[in-house]
Amino acid sequence: MRRILRWVVGLPIVVLVIGFAIANRGSVTLSFDPFTSVNPSLYLIMPLWLLFFAGILVGLIVGGIVSWWAQGKHRKAAREARSEALKLQAELADLRKPQQVVAAAQDLVPFNGGIL
Image (cartoon, rainbow, N blue to C red; front, top):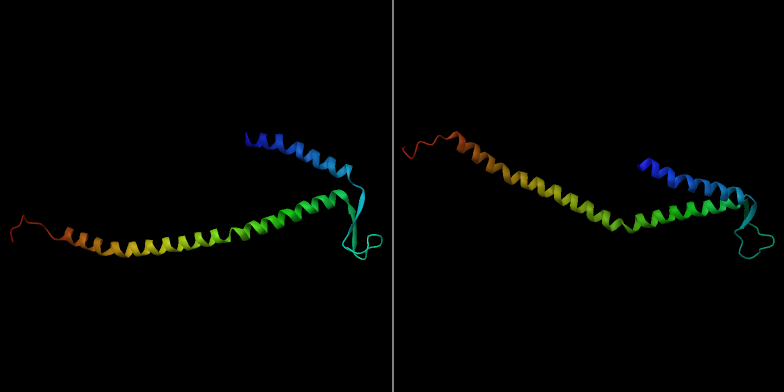
């Protein structure tokens, strides 16, 4: 079911992306010179579709980095909670050891009904 849904949604998206790339294959000039628009000193000439998809890619990367950075406090809290849980588990295991020794010793001593 999931595979069929992927094809039903993915195939039209792929067709639209390919159609967009074919329709916008003309070259555009990307200028990095804010002072001179007629003869810029730093520019790139590329197809419009490449500029569009490069912008999407840069946006995804920047958004991922910002999201990762913003969630840092949650990852830190999870690390601290995991560390605390491990410490408490070790402490609980240490506290249970004497009880196990006492229980084992009581099993070894026979009970004779109160008669010495």
